[in-house]
Structures are given as C-alpha cells and as structure tokens.
Length: 170
Image 1 (tube, helix red, strand yellow):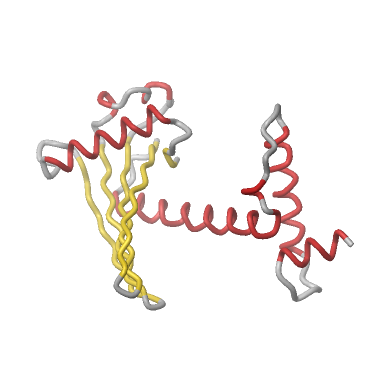
Image 2: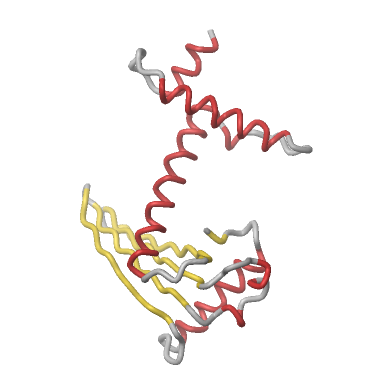
C-alpha cells in the first residue's frame, strides 16, 4: 500500500527512517536492496528499492496496521533529453516478499494508478471536481469508475474516451 501525504504521520515516519538509514549507508539496518534499469522510448529509467524488515518499532503509527511486516522505499530516476528527475515513493506491506518482487509490484501499482487517474482526469475532469461535502466525492468517484468501465467496453466508435462520453451525453 502506498504511503502518501493523506497519512502525514506515517508518511513522515517512514521517510525519516529511510533518510536516517541512508545517512549511514544502511550500515546496521536490516534492509534488502534491488535495482532495475530500463532504456526505452528515448529515456533511461532506473528504479532502486529498499525493504526494511525490522523498522516497525521505529515507525509511529505502524501498530495501527494489522499484519504489517515491512516498509519500502522506491527511488525512480528518469532521464529524458539530458533532464533528470528523481522521485521517492514509500509503501507499507504485509508481505515478506523479496525486494525484487516488491519493486515489481510497486511498478505495476504505479502504472495502473497513473493510467486510471489519467483517464478519469481527461474524460471526466476529475481533478477539477470541488465536491467535498458528505459522501458526495466518494459517490461520484464510484459513478465515474462505472462510467469509465462502460466506456472502455464500448468499441463501435473509434474515438477517445472524452469524445465517447460527450457522444453518449448527446
């Protein structure tokens, strides 16, 4: 499960743990490491993954997650036309999988999340929604997902999702 700013204490605790461990080059920490390198479509992308197995006593709030076994940090370094960006993502996991399998799982999670959110934003302008009261935001998100699934199944019109949505609305 990705740890984001929506869980500020947990996010900060996991980030602080890996920052401290990195300062001493992970010396004395029970951490596994794996790295992948991809060169496709004119870009170079490397992903590094660190999985900490004994970090939970140091993570404030970890006791609230039943079955939690590990914390994970994934560093993505992407170079496109001489411009390099580095991003850190953090995860918690109930699995004691290998670092390599957790790195693969984080990549799959990111790809699905990016694809889904991109489609919802393009077709439904989801990021512009200002509905915040009660269950309105959650209810509309469910309706958008249903509509997106129906639009994805519709294959008679060879047009984009946004245009399919507009066509159905007419």
